[in-house]
Every structure is written in C-alpha cells, then in structure tokens.
Image 1 (cartoon, rainbow, N blue to C red):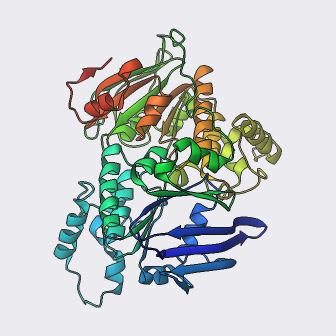
Image 2 (tube, rainbow, N blue to C red; image 1 turned 45 degrees about the vertical axis):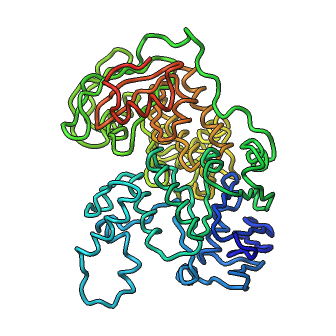
Image 3 (cartoon, rainbow, N blue to C red; image 1 turned 45 degrees about the horizontal axis):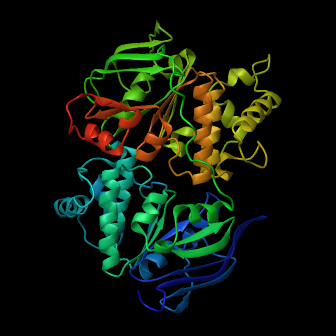
Amino acid sequence: MTETPILEVRGVTKSFGPIHALRGVDFRLMAGEIHALAGENGAGKSTLMNIIDGILQPNGGEIFWQGRPVRIPSPTAAQALGIGFVHQEIALCPDVSVAENIFMAATNISRAPFMDYRALERRAGEILSQICGIDQRRMAGDLAIAEQQLVEIAKALTLDCKVLILDEPTAALTNREAEALFRIMRRLADRGIAIIFISHRMAEVFENCDRVTVFRDGQYIATMNIADITPDDVVKAMVGRVIGDLYPPKARAGSISEQAVLEVSGLTDGCRFHDVSFRLRKGEILGIGGLIGAGRSEIVRGICRLEGEVQGEIALDGRPLALRDYRDSIRAGLVYLSEDRKGDGVFLDMSIAANVSALDISRVASRAGLISEARERAQADELGRRLNLKCDQLSDPVASLSGGNQQKVAIAKMLTVGPKVIFLDEPTRGVDVGAKAEIHRILRDLAGKGTGIVVISSEMPELIGLCDRVIVVCEGRITGEVEGERMTEENIMQLASAALPRGRVA
C-alpha cells in the first residue's frame, strides 16, 4: 500500500431536509487494500458511497483522488476517474440478454453501426466463467435474484477501475459463489485495485479484508486493522453496545411435538422440482438449504401456488388442502415472504400502515367497505410494538425505513392474517447485525407460540444457528436432512452438492 491514499474523504456532510445522514465523516482508502465499511442500516455507508460515485452531492467536506481535491458531479465522472460501483439494489435490464447487460455501458459509448453479438457473448462468457456458470445468452429477467447479483458483479469486472465498491455483494450468494468472488477480489487487490467492501457478515470481513472503518448514526467512529481486533470489537463499535446472542436459544429437547402442522408429499412441477416430501413440526423452525438454482424458492412458491402448476399433496394440521392460487393459500393460513423485499415484499412508496394491512384490507374496512384509517393505524401500531418497529410515524413511507425495519413491516403484513405457516425466503438479506438478531428473536417467538416457520437461507451460519432442523435441496430434489450435532456446514454442503447418497444425515 502506498503512502498517499488513492481516495480520501475529509469532513463530508450530507443532509436530507432535517435528517443528517452524514456528520463530518472521514475515510481513507489505500491502493491494493480490501477495506470493509461497517455499520448498521442508516449509519451512512450507502450515502457516502453514493457521494463517491457521484449519485449524490455532499453539503460540505472534501474528496481527494490520488492526493488531489476533486468534485464528482455524476456517475459518469466517477467512472472516468476509475471508480466502479456494484450496488446492493439490482438494476439489470430484464428484456435483454445477460451478455448485453454486462457490456451495456461499453455498447452505449460505442460508435460501431452494428453489434457483434458473437464477440459480445464470447467476452461475457469469459468473465462469467470466473465466478459462476450462468449462460450469457439467457434473458436477465429469467434469472433468480442471486444470479442477477452475480451478473451485476460481472459487469463491474469489465470496468478498468482503480477503486471498486461492493455493497453487500454476497447477500444472495451461497458459499461457493461467494468464495469465487473473494478470490477475484484478492486478485484485483494484488493488481493494486482498491476495494471498498460493505457487508453485515463479520466472517466475510475478517476472512477477506485488511482494514475496517465503522460508521454509526452518520458519524465516523473508528478505522481498525483486521489483524488487531475481533468481530465483537466491530459489532460494539457499530451499535455502541454489546449485542446479545445473534441467535436465540433453540427449542428445548422434547418441546417440539411430533405432530405436524404442515405435511408435503410428492410435490412436483415436472420441471424445476420433483417428488418433494417433508414435515414441519409444531414449535420448530425448519430450514431449507441448497445451492443457487437448486429449486428452494420454487418449491415454496409452488406450495403457496404463486407460480406454475404442481401435483402432490399438502396437509395443514392433518387436513388436506386444495389450493388453486395464492389467495387460497392465504385463506388456508400459508403465507410467503419473498427474498426480493423491495420488489415483492413491501410497497416502498406507500405508508407503513397501508403496507401492514395490504394482505387483507377487509380487516381494516368500515361497514361501508372503505378502509378505516383509524383501524389501519391501530393494527399497524399493535404489530409495530410487537415487532419493535422503529419509525417516526406510521404514515411515513416504507422507503424511509432501514432495511431491517422494512423487513419487520413485511413480517407484520404476514401476521395480519393470523397465518399457521410462514415461509421466509432469505429473511435477513441486506439486514444489519442488530436487526438480524431481532428478526431471529421474532421468528423464534412465533414458532414458540405455534406458528409454523420455514426459512430459506443461503447464509450457512443462519441455517445452523436459527433452525432446529434443515432439509437440503439439490437439483430440485430433497437429498437429506440434518439436525442436532450433525447440523454442520460440511454435512449441508455435501447434501447440497449431492456428495452423499440421498437420505438422512443425523
């Protein structure tokens, strides 16, 4: 690392009306380092990155590029300097191919009269082969969220950048894809490229980063060498207090009934998953593990009749269900929380109260059939207090909330219909460590009170720490299950990659 920072921020401030997002923050980035930026949602991390990328303009302070003061008026100007930014929010064009998405910026500035699709696809395939096996000819809109994230990363790798910003790049990735990304990050750093790595996963920060800078409430707190600290030091700096256990105690031995609240038998859609059978017992949290593209989300969406035709049997509390669509699923007591929180989980521009009531507005309707604002507020207030929702007013738009609080609103919406089973797909994706612990507590409390909880997660520690039992999916089939002492990353990965014969690992 050189003496002069490649990028330095001094005393930068940013306000949105009365809200102070950044309060005189400092940040120094050296060439060739992987520098983590940590802090709870709302700490100011993304605001600073948007300023560095020219998306936002600061109210005060200075930015230095290779020791010289600069102004970055736009993302184009940032890219001209050599700054690349992989945003947490995916922004692909769904109606064109993966290859066209990867090279869209280059295509836009090209003066060639015709596009050489073969060359485009060949170059895209070379880049994708470094991190995943996605077919560059597929339409971007047909990809799963995790696959779209990998394409966003591939786009950044095409840029000739000196600074690469990665905002929660592994939030939707499994261990295998994440490890491939980390290898690429280290190769880039070895070439002198500086990387800003934003992640809520402490294990990733400590395994791959050289230094970490912590923000809290829009203020700079500290910069520390990874080799000199522990994850607890970072968490304490982030939240200003010691966080309790990230995962609440699991159900006590013998407290989980053998009685099934949900039974699925022989479920298949003839294409993406086949012969899926499992039981969810009362009082337990059941995890679903597997690699990207294994069919985890498709199975759950099939159960809830959210997409496609399925065959098989589903029983709730011992009674067979005949579901035609998601409306029938809700009425029966089965609800689903999407992994795409901002696309399918909440309505960002609507109020918190309106979001909470959205799944069944009849519960807040007056006798005349109109929505009663008083009932809507009362319902949102009750569930908000129950879930420890942090907001100013229930009339505020959900977009004004942190990621963790947006997720609480999405969970509150599920609870309004009194569900018997809640399926949660990546429930803590993009959520900071404090909110993650709260969501885990909420799920354990719900399970303890009789609600069936099924969690899909690509985060192995979450499956192991939160769930009482994990079933593993590989190529659309359940290859086994683990629980107790056999619930280890090694056993789950063996089943996820079909490295063991199908069956129970216990």
